[in-house]
Length: 500
Ligand code: NAD
Image (tube, rainbow, N blue to C red):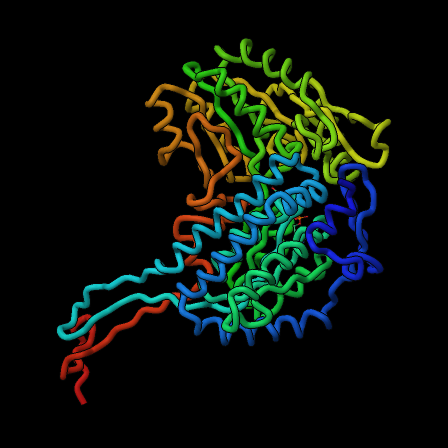
């Protein structure tokens, strides 16, 4: 199947993917696969107006009925999993297994959201006043702008959109300029679900805007977009957050990570080895939850490290659409330059490098495949504290658990973390108030590969947002407290007397 066939199979037409100003390339071989028209401010204003009109109708559709649309969307995704998974691989460069996994995650969040559509529970609250009842209710919030990153071109959008739809909010999606075709393909799938759903799905429930950061900024600045959910780098979050705050909008931020694993003396090293490799080289180290720091107890260091470097030496690198390949390309030349620069700096800071460097350059001169790198570091230096979006794993040693946890937490980011240990004192300490400071903390599982149900996100420079599970739906609704007086008197709270 050629590149073009993958686009056509996803229903993208020549008119949609040709003739625009924005070139889209596949990281597989660097070839241009589409040219898209972009949206400027003048194009986006009517789209926001359309979404507002859609909101006025959609908020009146009962939530379980809204869930029915999401159920139909999930069904369409099931039917199109293979095609969309291939497109994810073509555009983002992750191996097909991971491309398919991303679509499965969309299906899973749809299932979750359908159940949720009958469970948007409020509270009843005991009133201190006789003949009064109190409750908390949840209402649709308004237009939700969703800005997404290149490395997960579809799943994080679905985490937001599936919940936003059941919560009564229309969505405007600004995908990464590196992976816009996935968004266009998903919009087609959604359109089919909306058609099957029938009349009460208003037009403009999902709209996609194409462009770079300037396009995203328009959503960020619009007072008609009360919720902005943005996934991407910490630098992006730093720009977006104050702008949304300035207009008192709600921002849900899913930003960079610098995820670590502690391997304790009692760890099952076979499990640890598999988990390290999957989470450090999966998606070529371009997951927000990629394992970037390995903190090894000194008693396991000399056993585990040689085994790890041996596995790294044999990793199948190549076309991510080919079965058996485990490491696909980096997204682009800038990512390769970032990796090379980080490795240079790590060496200057005392690191000993295993692996690294460009791979398959003869076969793919316009793409950027790399040998994943392991760097033994004398301490947690400046470069280790920085998220380099590439397969670089920094290895450090520790002696006492408290020292490992301190090292673990001494980075600006706070997304995902894990410990490999069979000692319950250690594992429970890691999960306790004095343990990991991340939004995700795992035991005997790597930091990446989260499943739907648990809220996803992290602290510090990761932005504090939570998506996709637990009570994340509350981020897409407004909360209202209601007090109802069904008595014949008007007692005031706190016993205040105010007689006229
Ligand atoms: P990026 O920050 O370059 O871009 C992300 C998105 O934000 C793109 O759509 C981009 O156009 C938009 N954008 C950038 N600046 C903007 C601005 N000022 N206003 C509005 N929109 C703006 O990130 P990327 O390179 O696509 O993705 C990699 C980064 O994303 C990594 O740091 C990774 O850790 C992070 N990420 C985080 C999560 C998470 O859930 N925490 C998930 C995936 C990726």
